[in-house]
Length: 128
Image 1 (cartoon, helix red, strand yellow):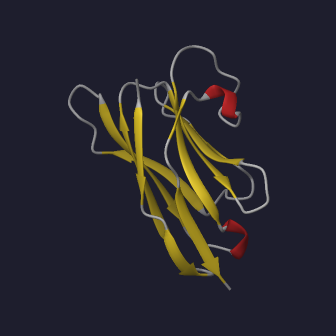
Image 2: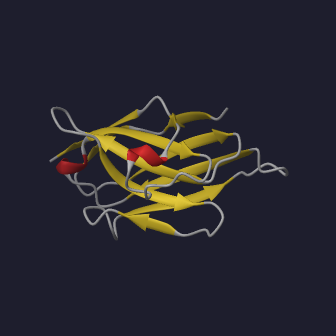
């Protein structure tokens, strides 16, 4: 079983920055960030493959958002995934969710079907 605990959301003015954190308890193959704005479908934001270290971003956030990992335990059973949000826009206002996937079934980082576990979400509000 994998547990995900998110933190770091808040309110910020356009052009500002925020850092979201997702504590990951358990072994995972891939990690991702999704967001859901009011009245809209959930969309993929960014993802990371733990084995290769490769990270990918949605076009809408490329160059503004960045994933990093840290605070890993010695046995890698615990890790923290960060999402740095820079140059925020009102269109970035949403509930942000981290997600983790285990096993070999992988539909690509952008697909929610690739993830088995989800965080509780943290809200980001950007005012113009």
